[in-house]
Length: 357
Image 1 (cartoon, rainbow, N blue to C red):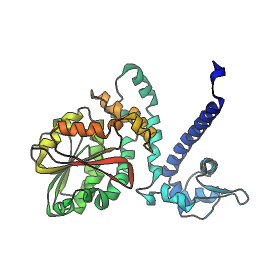
Image 2: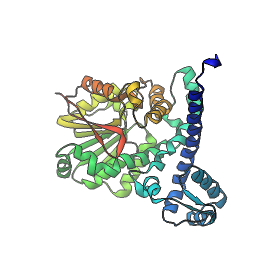
Image 3: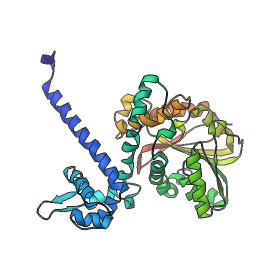
């Protein structure tokens, strides 16, 4: 049997696997560089020793030195062996620091550890076929809030809301807005602060997320903003909102079809549904060309699909894709849908539609 092997292909695949495990290690180290502030520290330093970097960052030098070893061998930072100094190039700073938002890849690297934390539970789920609940995901809301800050909040007023002509003016005049699956509520808080004449409501099934959102709203004195724990598959309002938003929330739902029907019913005549969701195609052979295809299917398997299954849902998964989304929006009672993408965000599509009634 081995005689039939193409050794060139075996060797090439071996090289791919070696690169994969190196890159996986780097992803964890990049996540640590973000969480400890090391990239932000190095961005403001010239070439420096591990002692100087650790002192500036107020961290243990021994840990910083080992981390720098991974960064240097992974070509993330430059190392001068004569001077024993490390430097973060400006071109890398542009993609690894908090100041680089919305282009900070380091924040997204945190998902590797978050998902790894539930590997045992997901492996068990492969056998019993049920899901893993939200409560099992350590740091989920914290990391998701950072993700929202990058992909939504940072570009909300310059790029996302302008996708709907005239919407910014209507918000300034005063309309009723609902965000479903609002999590920690960062997008809503930003809108409430920007548009004090509009009224904003945020619903999420997570008491933890809603508590954080409500505390932040109170801290900022946003009287036009309220949050509540609510299963949006049982959304009570009818004809109440001018705008409903859903940022990366629909595919996780236990009853996504019911949620979409409720959104259509909750909108006033002519009301707008603005839905951000993952930019899959609904077809694996087409998703092979997606620049983040493997990562998105990984997140889907390890989280999005699993939490839906845990709640008795269909397990759509993050890569349910545009074709399925359009069919479900039509079945829920929406009219024609415009699908947009934004230059800063290769991970998401933006669906804009109104109820067909």
